[in-house]
Amino acid sequence: MMKYLGLPMLASEHGKDVDNFILYVHYLMGILFVGWLAYFLYALFRFRATRCPKASYVGAQTHASSYIEAAVAAVEGVLLIGLSVPLWAKFADAFPAESEATSVRVVASQFQWQGVYPGRDGQFGNQAFTLVNTTNQFGWDYRDPLTLDNFTGPLNVISVPEGKPVIAHISSKDVILSFKVNAFRITQDAMPGMTIPIWFNPTTNGTFIITCAQLCGNSHYFMKGYFNVLPQDKWEEFVSANSANAANAAQGFE
Image (cartoon, rainbow, N blue to C red; front, top):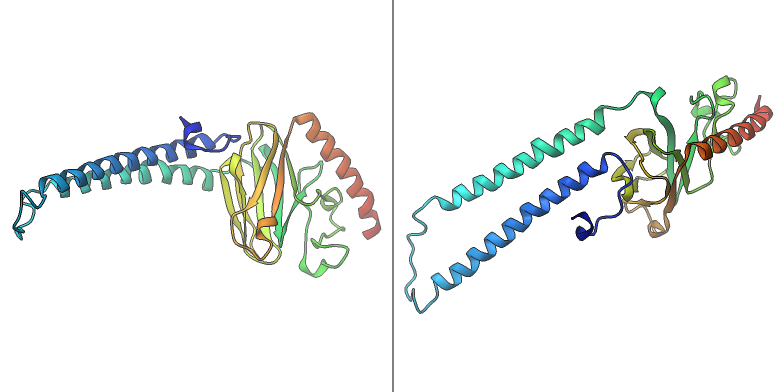
């Protein structure tokens, strides 16, 4: 059924719940459309001028419309309270443990995406605004051993391993942007001065398009990136190679 709604391919564990919610809303809207259209056509026929030449100012004598409105409100309440709120609570509050997930930082700016990774040890080192300069854009404190293998990926390419929860910390260097990957059914605004975590579990390896869902300037249309979900062996190669390069480069800052 989903393909008939024109939804993009699904590549995350929680996405099926999002798609089901969209499907249920479409069912409700379809029922309302058919119902109100049928009533509209009935009213045109029932109260046509040849049958009712004189207007009646009494109005409806039954409470049928109130019952219908109450039923629609009840269904909407079920969709909201029974589906959307629990789904939101599950993925906004029930984060996996950092030790069981892949952590990555997604730093947005006009008009690009930058992935920052913790390296082989899986931990980010200390940072400070006072350390930011032309050669240390993220303010890494290289006196912290955990910093030495932290690295950044190529611009507009974010990589994670397949089959493991991902915790992505979203932030922005300049203006409000919005990180969106349709295949994962995730969208999160990137706010200057804030780091907002989201999580999801990618279920399919491949490359997926990152778009900006917030009008962010005159090159908003150009702000496209690629989200790579790698097989575990390819991910380990990616982390090992970049961690070693970062450690070598960090020696110049010590």
